Image (cartoon, rainbow, N blue to C red; front, side, top):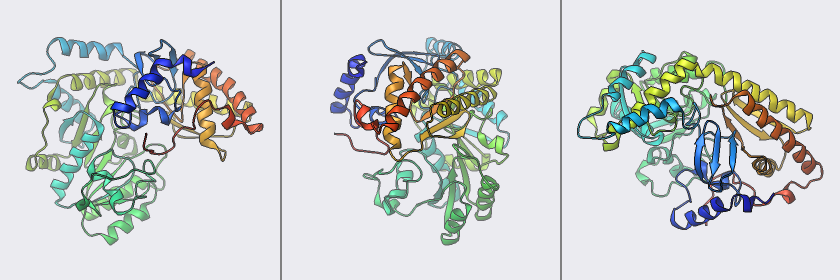
Length: 441
């Protein structure tokens, strides 16, 4: 099967996109080069449940990132779409404010009783920027200790002004801070998850840390009360503790993952996980800290539109009704077991990390990235979007899992032959997928 011909329209459109859109796409994680260079379908015309139709009319089962983690309920969910269509018909924007923003705030505060106030944005990156502005306004200090990935903003990328390897362990190697003001140098100090000694060293060497920011959990569990110890460090130095729940929120329990851990932050940030594919971001926090937003200027017209809050209210209601976290865990465990069974059957060495709701797959070989690319290539031929991760969705039903694992079984047999005969690179019909940030020509 010739993928170049099968995905002709998508490949051609992406080639044109790179000529008129810097970087080709708006999101690094959606670049075709991150999946299957020169062969990835790239664009869709329709998505429903866990299926995607590309521009050439090919139908794919999506067992990859499900909208980069945004569509927990599945694509084009009828309940959420119904609420949104009603909001559109009644007017999504006008001179007055929509009551849904108050309704959503009440809902989020009920789920998170430790918090007292809520502000909104529409994307994860800008939501984190709002949280950081509020936290710095409250603390009166510029320096931030951080762990993990938190977006594209100046405050975050400024970590690489001092050392261009500062962010390598937190996101992707090679992220350049060009355009970030040099005056921010030294304001961002990184520490790694489960390494409390790194945070303690930062605090010991810097008396002016005003904010600590991290994801409470993602692909690994906190060891030796790590998250609780971070909370204790923040309390000791009177720093504002921000939990970035943009990816993990509502996947492991209804609300933030911090509720499952039993450790409350001062500010928590939610975005794509709460609105099933519609733009929405929420920043919740302790009242005395959130009030600091009024001492700065944080304001934007489209933070007042109606669709985002409406989608979030409908999404959260359905996640509560369906007990989404329990379903995601059960389904993720079934997928994980199936992957290991297929790997053992076909003698493929794989490593799966992360929690059941959000799995990350890697191949334990020196040429692992080439093997992962071949895996994506051959799964695409089977009608499955597959990569290094699986963001589990409520749309995944028993038949979908069987369809996915049957494709995996066949493809793992192909991988075994390629690895045994040392022909992995020869079997690739295009370049190896990018593993880090690379400038596109």
